[in-house]
Length: 616
Image 1 (cartoon, rainbow, N blue to C red):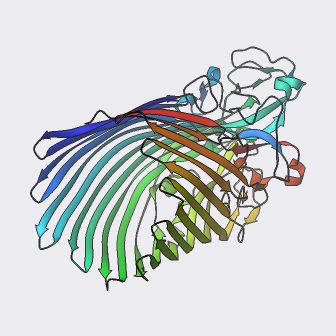
Image 2 (tube, one colour):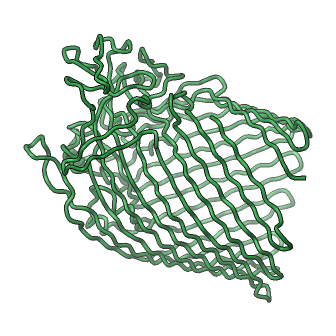
Image 3 (cartoon, rainbow, N blue to C red):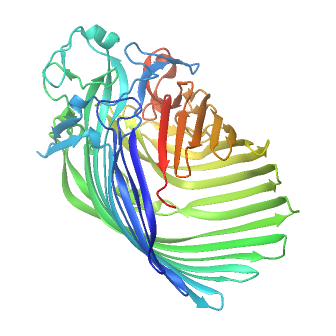
Protein backbone atom coordinates (compact mmCIF):
# COMPACT_ATOMS: atom_id res chain seq x y z
CA UNK A 1 0.00 0.00 0.00
CA UNK A 2 1.15 3.51 -0.82
CA UNK A 3 -0.42 6.32 1.21
CA UNK A 4 0.32 9.97 1.82
CA UNK A 5 -1.27 12.10 4.55
CA UNK A 6 -0.96 15.84 4.90
CA UNK A 7 -2.30 18.29 7.43
CA UNK A 8 -1.44 21.94 7.80
CA UNK A 9 -2.97 25.00 9.35
CA UNK A 10 -2.39 28.18 11.29
CA UNK A 11 -3.51 31.78 11.68
CA UNK A 12 -4.69 33.87 8.74
CA UNK A 13 -5.09 36.95 10.86
CA UNK A 14 -5.82 37.78 14.45
CA UNK A 15 -8.66 35.51 15.69
CA UNK A 16 -8.99 33.79 12.28
CA UNK A 17 -7.43 30.33 11.78
CA UNK A 18 -7.52 27.66 9.10
CA UNK A 19 -6.76 23.95 8.77
CA UNK A 20 -6.58 21.77 5.64
CA UNK A 21 -5.79 18.06 5.62
CA UNK A 22 -6.36 14.85 3.77
CA UNK A 23 -4.90 11.66 2.39
CA UNK A 24 -4.58 9.62 -0.79
CA UNK A 25 -3.84 5.90 -0.98
CA UNK A 26 -3.44 3.23 -3.64
CA UNK A 27 -3.42 -0.36 -2.43
CA UNK A 28 -3.35 -3.68 -4.27
CA UNK A 29 -4.53 -5.41 -1.13
CA UNK A 30 -3.01 -7.71 1.37
CA UNK A 31 -3.12 -10.60 -1.14
CA UNK A 32 -1.25 -8.71 -3.87
CA UNK A 33 -3.88 -8.60 -6.61
CA UNK A 34 -2.97 -7.31 -10.07
CA UNK A 35 -5.14 -4.20 -9.66
CA UNK A 36 -5.87 -1.64 -6.95
CA UNK A 37 -8.52 -2.95 -4.57
CA UNK A 38 -8.42 0.11 -2.30
CA UNK A 39 -7.97 3.48 -3.96
CA UNK A 40 -8.94 7.05 -3.21
CA UNK A 41 -8.78 9.65 -0.52
CA UNK A 42 -10.29 12.67 1.12
CA UNK A 43 -9.67 16.35 1.70
CA UNK A 44 -11.17 18.42 4.48
CA UNK A 45 -10.73 21.89 5.83
CA UNK A 46 -12.12 24.50 8.17
CA UNK A 47 -12.04 28.19 9.03
CA UNK A 48 -12.51 29.30 12.64
CA UNK A 49 -13.30 32.86 13.67
CA UNK A 50 -12.88 33.56 17.38
CA UNK A 51 -14.56 36.48 19.05
CA UNK A 52 -14.98 37.69 22.60
CA UNK A 53 -17.85 35.37 23.56
CA UNK A 54 -17.40 32.37 21.30
CA UNK A 55 -16.46 31.24 17.83
CA UNK A 56 -17.85 30.35 14.40
CA UNK A 57 -16.44 27.39 12.47
CA UNK A 58 -17.10 26.69 8.79
CA UNK A 59 -15.93 23.30 7.54
CA UNK A 60 -16.17 21.01 4.56
CA UNK A 61 -15.11 17.55 3.48
CA UNK A 62 -14.87 15.69 0.17
CA UNK A 63 -14.31 11.93 -0.08
CA UNK A 64 -13.76 9.82 -3.19
CA UNK A 65 -12.78 6.34 -2.08
CA UNK A 66 -13.02 2.72 -3.18
CA UNK A 67 -12.62 -0.16 -0.72
CA UNK A 68 -12.93 -3.89 -1.41
CA UNK A 69 -13.94 -6.70 0.96
CA UNK A 70 -11.77 -9.38 2.46
CA UNK A 71 -13.71 -12.06 0.58
CA UNK A 72 -14.40 -15.52 2.02
CA UNK A 73 -11.86 -18.18 1.04
CA UNK A 74 -12.32 -21.82 0.04
CA UNK A 75 -10.92 -24.41 2.47
CA UNK A 76 -11.45 -27.99 3.64
CA UNK A 77 -13.98 -28.09 6.48
CA UNK A 78 -13.29 -30.37 9.44
CA UNK A 79 -15.79 -30.88 12.24
CA UNK A 80 -13.05 -30.56 14.86
CA UNK A 81 -12.50 -26.95 13.81
CA UNK A 82 -9.17 -27.44 12.06
CA UNK A 83 -8.68 -26.07 8.55
CA UNK A 84 -7.64 -28.15 5.58
CA UNK A 85 -6.06 -26.63 2.48
CA UNK A 86 -7.39 -27.18 -1.03
CA UNK A 87 -4.67 -27.99 -3.60
CA UNK A 88 -4.07 -24.94 -5.78
CA UNK A 89 -5.18 -22.42 -3.14
CA UNK A 90 -2.79 -21.27 -0.43
CA UNK A 91 -4.72 -20.22 2.68
CA UNK A 92 -1.78 -18.13 3.89
CA UNK A 93 -1.36 -16.04 0.76
CA UNK A 94 -4.28 -16.79 -1.56
CA UNK A 95 -6.84 -14.10 -2.41
CA UNK A 96 -10.28 -15.01 -3.71
CA UNK A 97 -11.18 -11.79 -5.56
CA UNK A 98 -11.84 -12.20 -9.28
CA UNK A 99 -8.87 -11.65 -11.59
CA UNK A 100 -8.31 -8.37 -13.44
CA UNK A 101 -9.36 -9.88 -16.78
CA UNK A 102 -12.93 -10.43 -15.50
CA UNK A 103 -13.63 -7.48 -13.18
CA UNK A 104 -15.58 -5.67 -15.90
CA UNK A 105 -18.78 -7.55 -16.66
CA UNK A 106 -22.32 -7.01 -17.90
CA UNK A 107 -25.69 -8.74 -18.05
CA UNK A 108 -29.18 -7.95 -19.29
CA UNK A 109 -32.23 -7.77 -17.05
CA UNK A 110 -35.46 -9.42 -18.24
CA UNK A 111 -36.86 -5.96 -19.06
CA UNK A 112 -34.01 -5.35 -21.53
CA UNK A 113 -31.84 -3.02 -19.40
CA UNK A 114 -28.12 -3.75 -19.67
CA UNK A 115 -26.12 -3.59 -16.43
CA UNK A 116 -22.41 -2.73 -16.77
CA UNK A 117 -20.27 -3.05 -13.64
CA UNK A 118 -16.66 -2.98 -12.47
CA UNK A 119 -15.68 -5.08 -9.43
CA UNK A 120 -12.64 -2.85 -8.88
CA UNK A 121 -15.06 -0.18 -7.62
CA UNK A 122 -15.90 -2.36 -4.59
CA UNK A 123 -17.58 -0.16 -1.98
CA UNK A 124 -17.41 3.23 -3.64
CA UNK A 125 -18.15 6.40 -1.69
CA UNK A 126 -18.31 9.94 -2.95
CA UNK A 127 -19.25 12.38 -0.21
CA UNK A 128 -19.49 16.16 -0.18
CA UNK A 129 -20.16 17.63 3.25
CA UNK A 130 -20.55 21.21 4.48
CA UNK A 131 -21.16 22.38 8.02
CA UNK A 132 -21.27 25.23 10.51
CA UNK A 133 -20.55 25.21 14.23
CA UNK A 134 -21.39 28.20 16.41
CA UNK A 135 -20.76 28.71 20.12
CA UNK A 136 -21.76 31.83 22.06
CA UNK A 137 -21.61 32.81 25.72
CA UNK A 138 -25.07 34.11 26.71
CA UNK A 139 -23.98 35.18 30.17
CA UNK A 140 -24.98 34.01 33.63
CA UNK A 141 -23.16 30.68 32.93
CA UNK A 142 -25.35 29.90 29.89
CA UNK A 143 -23.83 28.96 26.52
CA UNK A 144 -25.48 28.42 23.13
CA UNK A 145 -24.12 25.68 20.85
CA UNK A 146 -25.39 25.06 17.33
CA UNK A 147 -24.12 22.51 14.80
CA UNK A 148 -25.44 22.30 11.23
CA UNK A 149 -24.35 19.88 8.50
CA UNK A 150 -25.40 18.86 4.98
CA UNK A 151 -24.13 15.65 3.31
CA UNK A 152 -24.59 14.60 -0.32
CA UNK A 153 -23.48 10.98 -0.70
CA UNK A 154 -23.17 8.45 -3.50
CA UNK A 155 -22.48 4.99 -2.10
CA UNK A 156 -22.33 2.14 -4.61
CA UNK A 157 -21.21 -1.42 -4.03
CA UNK A 158 -19.94 -4.13 -6.35
CA UNK A 159 -18.84 -7.47 -4.98
CA UNK A 160 -19.02 -11.20 -5.56
CA UNK A 161 -19.93 -13.66 -2.82
CA UNK A 162 -19.00 -17.32 -3.07
CA UNK A 163 -22.04 -19.46 -2.27
CA UNK A 164 -20.57 -22.96 -2.47
CA UNK A 165 -17.67 -25.09 -3.71
CA UNK A 166 -18.37 -28.04 -5.99
CA UNK A 167 -16.62 -30.40 -8.38
CA UNK A 168 -16.58 -29.53 -12.07
CA UNK A 169 -18.29 -32.03 -14.36
CA UNK A 170 -15.48 -33.56 -16.49
CA UNK A 171 -18.04 -34.57 -19.16
CA UNK A 172 -18.78 -30.91 -19.88
CA UNK A 173 -16.65 -28.27 -21.60
CA UNK A 174 -15.62 -25.11 -19.75
CA UNK A 175 -14.27 -21.83 -21.07
CA UNK A 176 -12.83 -18.57 -19.79
CA UNK A 177 -14.50 -15.30 -20.73
CA UNK A 178 -11.96 -14.67 -23.51
CA UNK A 179 -13.19 -17.86 -25.22
CA UNK A 180 -10.17 -20.03 -24.42
CA UNK A 181 -11.04 -23.56 -23.35
CA UNK A 182 -10.17 -25.11 -20.00
CA UNK A 183 -7.78 -28.03 -20.39
CA UNK A 184 -8.03 -31.08 -18.12
CA UNK A 185 -11.25 -30.07 -16.36
CA UNK A 186 -10.98 -32.81 -13.73
CA UNK A 187 -7.63 -31.42 -12.53
CA UNK A 188 -8.09 -27.69 -13.11
CA UNK A 189 -5.69 -25.87 -10.72
CA UNK A 190 -4.91 -29.23 -9.13
CA UNK A 191 -8.40 -29.50 -7.61
CA UNK A 192 -11.04 -29.66 -10.38
CA UNK A 193 -13.33 -27.36 -8.35
CA UNK A 194 -15.44 -24.28 -8.95
CA UNK A 195 -17.21 -21.77 -6.72
CA UNK A 196 -20.75 -20.62 -7.32
CA UNK A 197 -20.83 -16.83 -7.02
CA UNK A 198 -23.48 -14.19 -6.40
CA UNK A 199 -22.64 -10.86 -8.05
CA UNK A 200 -24.25 -7.88 -6.34
CA UNK A 201 -24.55 -4.41 -7.90
CA UNK A 202 -26.05 -1.60 -5.83
CA UNK A 203 -26.38 2.13 -6.51
CA UNK A 204 -27.41 4.37 -3.61
CA UNK A 205 -27.84 8.12 -3.23
CA UNK A 206 -28.20 9.65 0.25
CA UNK A 207 -28.86 13.22 1.36
CA UNK A 208 -28.53 14.21 5.02
CA UNK A 209 -29.44 17.44 6.77
CA UNK A 210 -28.97 17.80 10.51
CA UNK A 211 -29.17 20.73 12.90
CA UNK A 212 -28.51 20.44 16.64
CA UNK A 213 -29.22 23.40 18.94
CA UNK A 214 -28.13 23.25 22.60
CA UNK A 215 -28.36 25.51 25.61
CA UNK A 216 -25.77 24.59 28.23
CA UNK A 217 -25.50 25.91 31.78
CA UNK A 218 -22.55 25.03 33.99
CA UNK A 219 -22.26 25.83 37.67
CA UNK A 220 -20.31 24.53 40.60
CA UNK A 221 -22.91 21.84 41.27
CA UNK A 222 -24.28 20.82 37.89
CA UNK A 223 -23.93 20.90 34.10
CA UNK A 224 -27.31 21.15 32.37
CA UNK A 225 -27.91 20.68 28.63
CA UNK A 226 -31.22 21.35 26.83
CA UNK A 227 -31.18 20.32 23.19
CA UNK A 228 -33.29 20.30 20.04
CA UNK A 229 -32.41 18.35 16.91
CA UNK A 230 -33.80 17.98 13.39
CA UNK A 231 -32.57 15.25 11.04
CA UNK A 232 -33.68 14.71 7.44
CA UNK A 233 -32.57 11.71 5.42
CA UNK A 234 -33.33 11.02 1.74
CA UNK A 235 -32.60 7.75 -0.03
CA UNK A 236 -32.71 6.52 -3.62
CA UNK A 237 -31.56 2.97 -4.33
CA UNK A 238 -31.41 0.61 -7.31
CA UNK A 239 -29.90 -2.85 -7.16
CA UNK A 240 -29.59 -5.98 -9.25
CA UNK A 241 -27.68 -9.22 -9.02
CA UNK A 242 -26.39 -12.02 -11.17
CA UNK A 243 -25.09 -15.58 -10.95
CA UNK A 244 -21.85 -17.07 -12.20
CA UNK A 245 -19.01 -19.37 -11.16
CA UNK A 246 -15.25 -19.05 -10.77
CA UNK A 247 -12.31 -21.39 -10.37
CA UNK A 248 -10.56 -22.19 -7.09
CA UNK A 249 -7.15 -20.55 -7.19
CA UNK A 250 -5.39 -17.25 -6.42
CA UNK A 251 -7.23 -14.42 -8.26
CA UNK A 252 -9.70 -16.82 -9.90
CA UNK A 253 -11.25 -16.28 -13.32
CA UNK A 254 -14.90 -16.69 -14.25
CA UNK A 255 -15.81 -20.07 -15.72
CA UNK A 256 -18.32 -20.52 -18.55
CA UNK A 257 -19.96 -23.92 -19.03
CA UNK A 258 -20.75 -25.62 -22.38
CA UNK A 259 -20.40 -22.66 -24.77
CA UNK A 260 -18.13 -19.58 -24.82
CA UNK A 261 -19.76 -16.42 -23.49
CA UNK A 262 -19.83 -14.04 -20.54
CA UNK A 263 -20.75 -16.65 -17.95
CA UNK A 264 -23.04 -14.11 -16.22
CA UNK A 265 -26.79 -14.75 -15.75
CA UNK A 266 -29.25 -12.28 -14.28
CA UNK A 267 -30.83 -13.57 -11.07
CA UNK A 268 -34.03 -11.74 -12.04
CA UNK A 269 -34.65 -14.50 -14.59
CA UNK A 270 -35.32 -16.84 -11.66
CA UNK A 271 -36.24 -14.77 -8.62
CA UNK A 272 -37.87 -11.37 -7.94
CA UNK A 273 -35.01 -10.37 -5.61
CA UNK A 274 -32.75 -10.11 -8.69
CA UNK A 275 -33.76 -6.48 -9.24
CA UNK A 276 -35.20 -3.75 -7.03
CA UNK A 277 -35.83 -0.02 -7.00
CA UNK A 278 -36.93 2.21 -4.11
CA UNK A 279 -36.81 5.74 -2.75
CA UNK A 280 -37.95 7.62 0.32
CA UNK A 281 -37.29 10.27 2.91
CA UNK A 282 -37.28 10.31 6.70
CA UNK A 283 -37.74 13.19 9.17
CA UNK A 284 -36.88 13.10 12.87
CA UNK A 285 -37.56 15.83 15.42
CA UNK A 286 -35.89 15.35 18.81
CA UNK A 287 -35.73 17.04 22.19
CA UNK A 288 -33.23 16.01 24.85
CA UNK A 289 -32.19 16.96 28.35
CA UNK A 290 -29.13 15.96 30.35
CA UNK A 291 -27.70 17.03 33.68
CA UNK A 292 -24.65 16.11 35.68
CA UNK A 293 -25.26 16.81 39.36
CA UNK A 294 -22.49 17.03 41.93
CA UNK A 295 -24.22 15.87 45.13
CA UNK A 296 -20.97 16.02 47.11
CA UNK A 297 -17.25 15.86 46.52
CA UNK A 298 -17.56 12.05 46.44
CA UNK A 299 -20.95 11.47 44.79
CA UNK A 300 -22.07 12.47 41.28
CA UNK A 301 -25.30 11.71 39.36
CA UNK A 302 -25.88 12.14 35.62
CA UNK A 303 -29.33 12.03 34.06
CA UNK A 304 -30.47 11.97 30.45
CA UNK A 305 -33.77 11.98 28.57
CA UNK A 306 -34.55 12.11 24.84
CA UNK A 307 -37.85 12.19 22.93
CA UNK A 308 -37.99 11.47 19.18
CA UNK A 309 -40.82 11.91 16.70
CA UNK A 310 -40.14 10.26 13.37
CA UNK A 311 -42.02 10.02 10.08
CA UNK A 312 -41.06 8.39 6.81
CA UNK A 313 -42.51 7.89 3.38
CA UNK A 314 -41.40 6.43 0.10
CA UNK A 315 -42.15 3.79 -2.51
CA UNK A 316 -40.84 0.48 -3.81
CA UNK A 317 -41.16 -0.84 -7.34
CA UNK A 318 -43.60 -3.73 -7.69
CA UNK A 319 -42.17 -6.94 -9.17
CA UNK A 320 -43.95 -8.31 -12.24
CA UNK A 321 -43.54 -11.52 -14.22
CA UNK A 322 -42.47 -15.05 -13.33
CA UNK A 323 -39.48 -17.36 -13.18
CA UNK A 324 -38.15 -18.92 -16.39
CA UNK A 325 -38.09 -22.20 -14.45
CA UNK A 326 -41.91 -22.18 -14.42
CA UNK A 327 -42.28 -20.89 -17.99
CA UNK A 328 -42.08 -17.15 -17.32
CA UNK A 329 -39.79 -14.55 -18.84
CA UNK A 330 -38.21 -13.40 -15.59
CA UNK A 331 -39.06 -10.53 -13.26
CA UNK A 332 -39.30 -6.86 -14.20
CA UNK A 333 -40.09 -3.67 -12.31
CA UNK A 334 -43.57 -2.19 -12.48
CA UNK A 335 -45.28 0.77 -10.86
CA UNK A 336 -44.14 2.08 -7.48
CA UNK A 337 -46.06 1.02 -4.39
CA UNK A 338 -46.04 3.84 -1.78
CA UNK A 339 -45.53 3.36 1.96
CA UNK A 340 -45.49 5.63 4.97
CA UNK A 341 -45.14 5.30 8.73
CA UNK A 342 -44.64 7.45 11.77
CA UNK A 343 -44.00 6.99 15.46
CA UNK A 344 -42.64 8.47 18.66
CA UNK A 345 -40.47 7.00 21.37
CA UNK A 346 -38.14 7.98 24.16
CA UNK A 347 -34.88 7.04 25.79
CA UNK A 348 -33.62 7.72 29.31
CA UNK A 349 -30.55 6.98 31.39
CA UNK A 350 -29.29 7.49 34.93
CA UNK A 351 -25.75 7.04 36.15
CA UNK A 352 -23.97 7.22 39.48
CA UNK A 353 -20.32 7.69 40.36
CA UNK A 354 -19.12 7.38 43.96
CA UNK A 355 -15.52 8.12 44.93
CA UNK A 356 -14.44 5.85 47.78
CA UNK A 357 -11.05 7.54 48.15
CA UNK A 358 -8.40 9.26 46.06
CA UNK A 359 -7.70 6.13 44.02
CA UNK A 360 -10.97 4.17 43.90
CA UNK A 361 -14.46 4.88 42.56
CA UNK A 362 -17.62 2.87 41.93
CA UNK A 363 -20.02 3.58 39.08
CA UNK A 364 -23.39 2.31 37.86
CA UNK A 365 -25.66 3.11 34.93
CA UNK A 366 -29.08 2.07 33.72
CA UNK A 367 -30.81 3.02 30.47
CA UNK A 368 -33.92 2.45 28.42
CA UNK A 369 -33.52 3.01 24.70
CA UNK A 370 -35.01 1.84 21.44
CA UNK A 371 -34.25 1.08 17.83
CA UNK A 372 -36.80 3.13 15.91
CA UNK A 373 -38.37 2.70 12.52
CA UNK A 374 -35.86 3.26 9.73
CA UNK A 375 -36.27 3.99 6.06
CA UNK A 376 -33.88 1.15 5.27
CA UNK A 377 -36.26 -1.35 6.90
CA UNK A 378 -38.96 -0.41 4.40
CA UNK A 379 -36.76 -0.33 1.31
CA UNK A 380 -35.24 -3.77 2.03
CA UNK A 381 -36.14 -6.04 -0.85
CA UNK A 382 -38.91 -8.51 -0.06
CA UNK A 383 -39.92 -7.06 3.32
CA UNK A 384 -43.59 -7.32 4.31
CA UNK A 385 -44.49 -3.70 5.04
CA UNK A 386 -47.75 -4.55 6.80
CA UNK A 387 -45.91 -6.98 9.09
CA UNK A 388 -43.21 -4.36 9.68
CA UNK A 389 -45.78 -1.81 10.83
CA UNK A 390 -47.20 -4.29 13.33
CA UNK A 391 -43.85 -4.87 15.04
CA UNK A 392 -43.87 -3.47 18.54
CA UNK A 393 -41.28 -0.94 19.70
CA UNK A 394 -37.77 -2.35 19.56
CA UNK A 395 -36.75 -1.60 23.11
CA UNK A 396 -33.20 -1.76 24.46
CA UNK A 397 -32.53 -2.06 28.20
CA UNK A 398 -29.03 -1.82 29.66
CA UNK A 399 -27.57 -1.95 33.15
CA UNK A 400 -23.90 -1.60 34.12
CA UNK A 401 -21.89 -1.55 37.33
CA UNK A 402 -18.15 -1.17 37.69
CA UNK A 403 -15.05 -0.10 39.55
CA UNK A 404 -12.22 2.28 38.67
CA UNK A 405 -8.86 2.34 40.42
CA UNK A 406 -5.91 4.55 39.60
CA UNK A 407 -2.57 4.87 41.36
CA UNK A 408 0.88 6.01 40.27
CA UNK A 409 1.97 2.61 38.91
CA UNK A 410 -1.27 0.62 38.57
CA UNK A 411 -4.70 1.35 37.05
CA UNK A 412 -7.77 -0.87 36.82
CA UNK A 413 -11.16 -0.57 35.15
CA UNK A 414 -13.73 -3.35 35.39
CA UNK A 415 -17.44 -3.52 34.61
CA UNK A 416 -20.38 -5.89 34.38
CA UNK A 417 -23.08 -5.22 31.77
CA UNK A 418 -26.55 -6.59 31.04
CA UNK A 419 -28.43 -5.65 27.85
CA UNK A 420 -31.62 -6.81 26.16
CA UNK A 421 -33.01 -5.91 22.73
CA UNK A 422 -36.57 -6.69 21.65
CA UNK A 423 -37.89 -7.04 18.09
CA UNK A 424 -34.66 -6.15 16.29
CA UNK A 425 -34.87 -6.45 12.51
CA UNK A 426 -32.23 -7.78 10.17
CA UNK A 427 -31.76 -9.56 6.88
CA UNK A 428 -30.20 -12.98 6.34
CA UNK A 429 -29.38 -14.60 3.00
CA UNK A 430 -30.43 -18.16 2.18
CA UNK A 431 -29.10 -20.17 -0.79
CA UNK A 432 -31.62 -20.34 -3.62
CA UNK A 433 -32.72 -23.45 -5.50
CA UNK A 434 -31.71 -21.73 -8.75
CA UNK A 435 -28.31 -20.71 -7.32
CA UNK A 436 -27.35 -17.44 -5.69
CA UNK A 437 -28.89 -16.06 -2.52
CA UNK A 438 -32.35 -14.90 -1.49
CA UNK A 439 -32.73 -12.26 1.27
CA UNK A 440 -34.96 -13.13 4.22
CA UNK A 441 -36.15 -10.37 6.56
CA UNK A 442 -36.27 -11.57 10.16
CA UNK A 443 -37.08 -10.22 13.62
CA UNK A 444 -35.44 -11.38 16.82
CA UNK A 445 -34.79 -10.50 20.47
CA UNK A 446 -31.54 -10.90 22.39
CA UNK A 447 -29.99 -10.58 25.80
CA UNK A 448 -26.30 -10.12 26.56
CA UNK A 449 -24.28 -10.44 29.76
CA UNK A 450 -20.72 -9.22 29.50
CA UNK A 451 -17.79 -8.36 31.73
CA UNK A 452 -14.75 -6.26 30.85
CA UNK A 453 -11.47 -5.72 32.60
CA UNK A 454 -8.75 -3.26 31.63
CA UNK A 455 -5.59 -3.07 33.69
CA UNK A 456 -2.19 -1.50 33.24
CA UNK A 457 0.96 -1.71 35.32
CA UNK A 458 3.92 0.63 35.03
CA UNK A 459 6.95 -1.61 35.34
CA UNK A 460 9.36 1.33 35.26
CA UNK A 461 9.60 4.80 33.78
CA UNK A 462 9.90 3.27 30.32
CA UNK A 463 8.06 -0.05 30.48
CA UNK A 464 4.26 -0.54 30.60
CA UNK A 465 2.18 -3.72 30.75
CA UNK A 466 -1.49 -3.53 29.68
CA UNK A 467 -4.30 -6.12 29.64
CA UNK A 468 -7.76 -5.80 28.08
CA UNK A 469 -10.13 -8.77 28.34
CA UNK A 470 -13.84 -9.24 27.68
CA UNK A 471 -16.30 -12.00 28.47
CA UNK A 472 -19.69 -11.98 26.78
CA UNK A 473 -22.68 -14.29 26.74
CA UNK A 474 -25.03 -13.18 23.96
CA UNK A 475 -28.20 -15.23 23.47
CA UNK A 476 -31.26 -15.05 21.23
CA UNK A 477 -34.36 -15.01 23.42
CA UNK A 478 -36.74 -15.12 20.44
CA UNK A 479 -35.80 -15.97 16.85
CA UNK A 480 -38.42 -17.66 14.66
CA UNK A 481 -39.12 -17.54 10.92
CA UNK A 482 -40.38 -19.57 7.98
CA UNK A 483 -38.02 -19.73 4.97
CA UNK A 484 -38.98 -17.78 1.87
CA UNK A 485 -40.16 -19.39 -1.39
CA UNK A 486 -37.37 -20.25 -3.80
CA UNK A 487 -34.84 -21.07 -1.09
CA UNK A 488 -33.32 -24.51 -0.54
CA UNK A 489 -35.35 -24.74 2.69
CA UNK A 490 -38.58 -23.20 1.35
CA UNK A 491 -41.49 -23.36 3.80
CA UNK A 492 -39.45 -24.83 6.66
CA UNK A 493 -39.92 -23.28 10.11
CA UNK A 494 -36.82 -22.41 12.12
CA UNK A 495 -36.61 -21.67 15.84
CA UNK A 496 -33.22 -20.43 17.00
CA UNK A 497 -34.45 -19.10 20.33
CA UNK A 498 -31.98 -19.92 23.08
CA UNK A 499 -29.03 -20.09 20.69
CA UNK A 500 -25.85 -18.07 21.14
CA UNK A 501 -25.43 -15.06 18.85
CA UNK A 502 -23.14 -15.77 15.91
CA UNK A 503 -19.56 -14.53 15.54
CA UNK A 504 -19.47 -13.42 19.19
CA UNK A 505 -16.58 -15.12 21.02
CA UNK A 506 -17.20 -15.55 24.73
CA UNK A 507 -13.66 -14.49 25.59
CA UNK A 508 -11.32 -12.02 23.91
CA UNK A 509 -8.06 -10.63 25.27
CA UNK A 510 -5.19 -8.32 24.42
CA UNK A 511 -1.96 -8.39 26.42
CA UNK A 512 0.54 -5.67 25.45
CA UNK A 513 4.00 -4.76 26.69
CA UNK A 514 5.39 -1.42 25.52
CA UNK A 515 8.57 0.62 25.85
CA UNK A 516 8.79 4.40 25.50
CA UNK A 517 11.75 6.74 25.67
CA UNK A 518 12.50 10.18 24.28
CA UNK A 519 13.60 8.88 20.87
CA UNK A 520 12.44 5.27 20.68
CA UNK A 521 9.18 3.40 21.29
CA UNK A 522 8.15 -0.22 20.73
CA UNK A 523 5.35 -2.63 21.60
CA UNK A 524 4.36 -6.28 21.30
CA UNK A 525 0.88 -7.65 21.93
CA UNK A 526 -0.88 -10.99 21.91
CA UNK A 527 -4.54 -10.94 20.87
CA UNK A 528 -6.78 -13.88 21.70
CA UNK A 529 -10.17 -14.63 20.14
CA UNK A 530 -12.23 -17.38 21.72
CA UNK A 531 -14.34 -19.92 19.85
CA UNK A 532 -17.68 -18.77 18.44
CA UNK A 533 -20.60 -20.02 16.39
CA UNK A 534 -20.59 -19.27 12.67
CA UNK A 535 -24.35 -18.74 12.43
CA UNK A 536 -27.39 -18.33 14.72
CA UNK A 537 -28.26 -21.98 14.01
CA UNK A 538 -25.29 -22.95 16.25
CA UNK A 539 -24.32 -25.88 14.04
CA UNK A 540 -20.82 -24.79 12.94
CA UNK A 541 -18.26 -23.73 15.55
CA UNK A 542 -15.22 -21.63 14.69
CA UNK A 543 -12.08 -22.53 16.58
CA UNK A 544 -10.30 -20.11 18.92
CA UNK A 545 -7.02 -18.53 17.80
CA UNK A 546 -4.40 -15.93 18.73
CA UNK A 547 -2.23 -13.45 16.84
CA UNK A 548 0.90 -11.47 17.66
CA UNK A 549 1.26 -7.78 16.73
CA UNK A 550 4.35 -5.61 17.18
CA UNK A 551 5.78 -2.28 16.18
CA UNK A 552 8.48 0.31 16.77
CA UNK A 553 9.12 3.96 16.11
CA UNK A 554 12.15 6.25 16.18
CA UNK A 555 12.42 10.03 16.21
CA UNK A 556 15.17 10.75 13.68
CA UNK A 557 14.99 14.45 14.50
CA UNK A 558 12.62 16.94 16.06
CA UNK A 559 10.64 17.00 12.81
CA UNK A 560 11.16 13.53 11.29
CA UNK A 561 10.04 10.18 12.70
CA UNK A 562 9.88 6.64 11.30
CA UNK A 563 7.53 3.81 12.30
CA UNK A 564 7.07 0.13 11.50
CA UNK A 565 4.12 -2.07 12.46
CA UNK A 566 3.59 -5.78 11.89
CA UNK A 567 0.23 -7.54 12.07
CA UNK A 568 -0.11 -11.31 12.54
CA UNK A 569 3.63 -11.73 13.02
CA UNK A 570 3.63 -15.55 12.75
CA UNK A 571 1.09 -15.64 9.91
CA UNK A 572 -1.52 -17.59 11.86
CA UNK A 573 -4.30 -18.93 9.63
CA UNK A 574 -7.76 -19.03 11.23
CA UNK A 575 -11.39 -18.31 10.44
CA UNK A 576 -13.16 -15.22 11.74
CA UNK A 577 -16.47 -16.32 10.18
CA UNK A 578 -17.79 -19.33 8.32
CA UNK A 579 -20.18 -19.28 5.39
CA UNK A 580 -22.75 -17.02 7.06
CA UNK A 581 -24.97 -17.37 3.98
CA UNK A 582 -25.28 -21.13 4.05
CA UNK A 583 -23.73 -22.81 7.10
CA UNK A 584 -26.97 -22.55 9.08
CA UNK A 585 -28.74 -24.82 6.59
CA UNK A 586 -25.90 -27.28 5.93
CA UNK A 587 -25.63 -30.94 6.90
CA UNK A 588 -22.42 -30.66 8.91
CA UNK A 589 -21.81 -34.41 9.10
CA UNK A 590 -21.99 -34.65 5.32
CA UNK A 591 -19.67 -31.64 4.99
CA UNK A 592 -16.86 -33.09 7.12
CA UNK A 593 -13.68 -33.21 5.04
CA UNK A 594 -15.33 -31.40 2.11
CA UNK A 595 -14.56 -27.99 0.56
CA UNK A 596 -16.46 -25.05 2.05
CA UNK A 597 -16.32 -21.25 2.25
CA UNK A 598 -15.15 -19.17 5.22
CA UNK A 599 -13.73 -15.74 6.01
CA UNK A 600 -10.14 -16.02 7.25
CA UNK A 601 -8.11 -13.55 9.28
CA UNK A 602 -5.66 -11.27 7.53
CA UNK A 603 -2.22 -12.77 6.86
CA UNK A 604 1.14 -11.36 7.92
CA UNK A 605 1.44 -7.71 6.93
CA UNK A 606 4.05 -5.02 7.46
CA UNK A 607 3.46 -1.26 7.41
CA UNK A 608 6.13 1.43 7.41
CA UNK A 609 5.66 5.18 7.58
CA UNK A 610 7.62 8.42 7.71
CA UNK A 611 6.21 11.54 9.35
CA UNK A 612 7.58 15.04 8.86
CA UNK A 613 6.39 18.09 10.80
CA UNK A 614 6.78 21.31 8.81
CA UNK A 615 5.91 23.44 11.84
CA UNK A 616 8.32 25.17 14.16
